Length: 87
Image 1 (cartoon, rainbow, N blue to C red):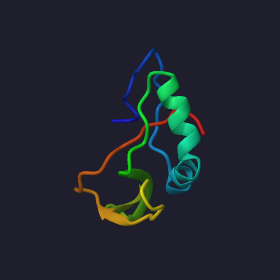
Image 2 (cartoon, rainbow, N blue to C red):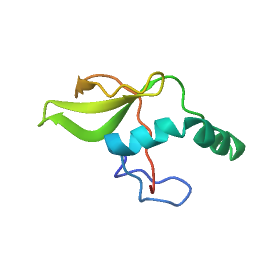
Image 3 (spheres, rainbow, N blue to C red):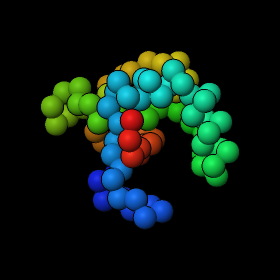
Image 4 (cartoon, one colour):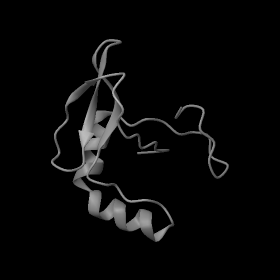
């Protein structure tokens, strides 16, 4: 979905890695302030998918924006996604 996303004439979106998501978690307050100031949405205390696989073709890591944990989930799990353009 991220690879095919076209939004505001941008089409270079991707799903961040678990390391990129962790950096975003550490800077959540700054990102939320910037996002909401520009008509975007803030991170909730949700869990977001990363592009980093935990078990090949079966599971991937996610990032908790509530407590910083990075659990692995089966790929059929319903978890939030936050596409990004650059890091």
